Length: 192
Image: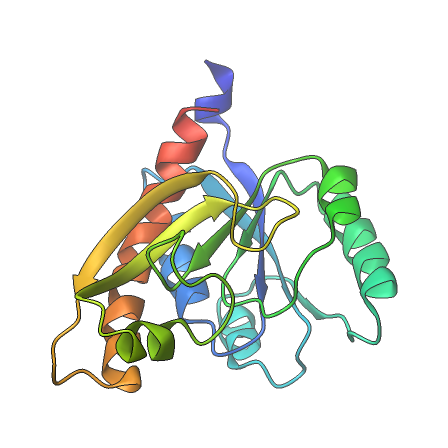
């Protein structure tokens, strides 16, 4: 039972504006939160999410991505140093290797802007609209060594209207991502 009461030291990996980071930080400050965000890491010096991490007084680091091995070696050292129990990928635009996943050997979660298994990888909204899908959505899944293929924790659908553009669909999906990610973390941690 102990695991439910101790908050998990969590690292958030970002590459961009950090809107999911924001929702996770908000969640982490609630009474029912099961996570404590101890670290934000980005591969992008210009990621707007870093400013938010600064304002929220969360330790944040940029690791230059010259090649995957050196990036992952530095990341592993940083995660160990901060006693990280859980990684949440939030708009992190690099793929972690199977070797990294095995060495870290703790849960890594990702939020993906499609209703998996549809549209793994990039340009999810564009592909959904081109294929005239009736709905899209967001998925939180466990990261494994195959792109966007890990066990699904939670998903939510959104309707695609005929009037939707890539941009309007992206906004709709992002809105549900912000609610979905904290719920998925609670579900995942409560069952592990």
